[in-house]
Length: 311
Image (cartoon, rainbow, N blue to C red; front, side, top):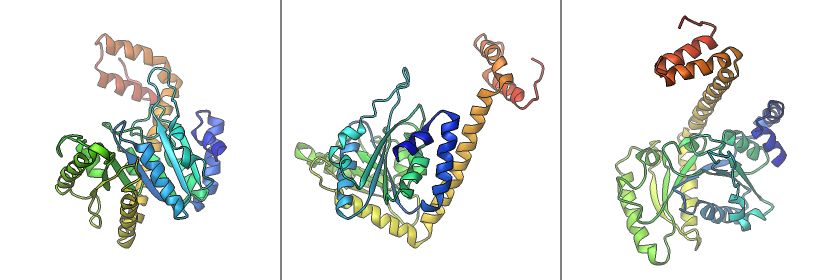
C-alpha cells in the first residue's frame, strides 16, 4: 500500500506513470467504501476525533483508512507529517491504515493525489475512508467534491451563527459537530451548537433528501461519536434511496477529470520551451508596466498555441 501510494504521489514522471498503471488495474474494485471528509479550524481536534471515530468503527468490524493531509511549508516545501503520531491507538490496529501526505501547496485542503489514494484504499478492502484536511480557509472545501459525507468540526464559543465559520463551508457541510464539549466548556458548546443549528435552518441543503444537522462531541471523552456515525449512516441511506449517491459520484468523477485536464495544461504550458524563452521578458514587461498582466497572459498563451503576435 505504502509503496503504491508513493508511486502515485511521486513527482517523477516514470514513477507516476507506474502508479497510474496500478490504479487503472484496480479501478473495478473501487467505489464501495463510505467516504467521509473532515475539516475544521486548527486546534479543533480533528485528529483526536478521527481516531475516536476510527476505533468505534473497528468495533463494528469495519476496516478504516485515514488520509491525513499535512500543510507544506511555503518556504522550504517540507511537511512534518506527524498526524499518525496523534492516532497511536488506531495506528497499531491491523484493520486500520493511516497515511499522512503533504499538501504540496495544493489549495482546497487536500493533496494533489488524495483522490487516487482514496481509490487505492478502497481496492485494498477498506470500507470506510476518512480524509482529514489541513483546516478551514478560503478554499478548504475541495474535499467536499470527493467524499460522500462532509463533516465540519467547530470549537465552542467560535462566534455567532453569522460569523463563526465561512458561509461557503456551511453550505457544503452535511453535518456540523461542536467538539470539545466537555468540562467547563460543555455548556458553552451546547449554546454554540444551538446557534449553528439555527444558521443551518437558513441554508438550502445540498440534497433534498438530507437536512444538515449540528451535533455535540467530545473526542477526548469519546462522547458524541455514535451520533456522528449514525448521521453518516442515515445520510448514506438517504442518498442511496433517491439515487443521489450515484449521481453525486458521477458528477465528482467528471469534475475530477476536468481538474486533471486543467493541471495538465498548466504543466504543459510551463514546460513548453517556446514559452520558457519568453517568460522572463513578459515578466519584466509586467513589472515595468509596459504590458498589463492580462495582455502578458494572453501573449504567453498565444505563444503556447503557436499564435505568437507582434509585441
